[in-house]
Amino acid sequence: MTRAPDTSSPALEARAGIAPLMHHSSLMRFLIARIGSITAQQVLMLAISWHMYDLTSSAWYLGLVGLFQFIPGLATTLVAGHCADRMHRGQIVAVCLAAQAAMATLLAVSTMTHIVTRDLLLGLSLILGAIRPFQMSGQQALLPMLVPHTLLARSMALSTVVQQVCVIAGPALGGLLFAIGINALYLTCVVLFCVSAVMYALIRYDHIPPPREPVTVETLLAGLRFVWHNPLLLGGISLDLFAVLFGGATALLPVYAKEILHVGPQGLGLLRSAPAAGALCVGLMLSRRAIGSGVGRKLLIAVAVYGMAIVAFGLSRSFPISLLLLAISGAADTISVVVRQTLVQLETPDRMRGRVAAVNTLFIGASNQLGEFESGVTATAFGVVGSVVLGGCATILVSAAWSRLFKPLARREALY
Image 1 (cartoon, rainbow, N blue to C red):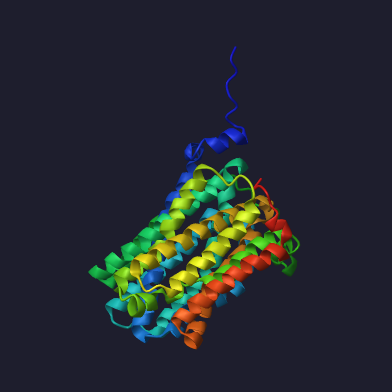
Image 2 (cartoon, one colour; image 1 turned 135 degrees about the horizontal axis):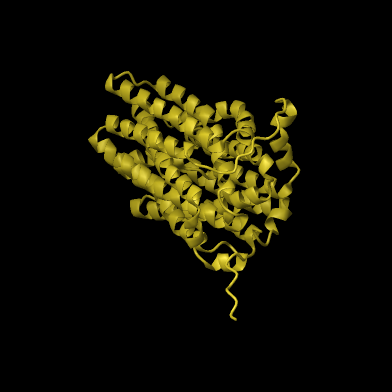
C-alpha cells in the first residue's frame, strides 16, 4: 500500500506556498482587521502631516508630530506589555482602534468648524502615542497564537504583505480623499477604525489567563531584562532602532513633495506608498517561501541596501527615480522586518510575548517617531537634503557595526 505523504512536515509546508495559511480562520480574520486599521492609520497620519505643514510651513513641527507620539509611549509601553500577557489580545487592539475612531471624529468636527490648530494636532499626537504601545503589543503577541510555529515566518510575511498593500492604498486613498475634501478623509478613517475594532474583538484563540500576581516593577521590567540578556534579540531589535532612526525620511516627504519634487498632496500620497510597493513584492515572495539559510547575513545586507537607497533618494530630483528608490528601500526593509519579527517571536515563550513585544514596540516607536523628530532637527540644521543623505549614510554604518557587535545575530543561519 502506498503511504500518504506527511503534509505536516516543515519541509513540505515550506514548499506549499500560502495555501496552508488559508485554513486558519482566526489568521484570516486577523489579516482582514489589519487591512482596515492600517489603511485608516495611513490615511490619518497623511492628513495630520499635511495639515501640520499646511498650517506651519515648518519641518520642525513635522518633527514634533513624531516626537509627541514617542514621548507618551515611554510611560505606557511596559504597562501595555503586561496587559498583553494577561488580557485577551484581540480585545486590547479593538479598544485602541475605537479610541482612534474617536480622535478621527474629533478632527472631522474641528475641521468642519474651522478650529483646527497646531496645538490640537500635537495634542492628538500625544494621545496616539499613548495608545500605540497597547495596540502594537497586542498585535505582535496575538499572531503567534493563531498559527503553528512552522507557519509563523510565512504568516509574518503575509501579514507584512497585507500591511504594505494598505500602506500603498492608504496614502493613495488619502490623496484621492483630499480632492473630495478633508472631512471625507477623516470620516472614512472613522468607519475603517470601527469595522476593524469589531473584527479584532471577534478573533478567537486559546486564551488562558495566567495566575493572578501583583503588578510590580519586576514584572513590568521582565521583558526588558529578557531582551537585554539575549544578544540575538537585543541585536535584532536595536538594529531596527538605529537603522530607521537615522535612515527614515518619512517625516520629510511633505517637504520633498511640495518644495523639491513639486508634486503636491497627490504626489505625497505616491511617495508615501512607494516603499510599500517594493515591500509588497518581497513580502509575497517570503510568504510563499521563507528565507532558508544565512538569515543573519541577509538581514544586515538588507539594512545596508536600505541605507544606500535612502542616500540616493535624498539626492534625487526626479519624481519617477525617487519613487523607484523608495520602493527599493521598502523591499530591503521588508526582509529586515520579517527576519527580525520572526526571530523575536520564536525566541520568546508565550508567557513573555506581550512584554517582549512591548520592548520591541518601544524600539520601533523610537525608530519611527523619534526618527521623525531627528529628521526635523537635522533638516533645520543641515537642510532637508543633507538630513536625508546623512541619515542614509549612518544606516549603512550601523549595519557594518552590528555585524561585529552582535555576532550571534550576524552568524544566525536559519529562522528555526
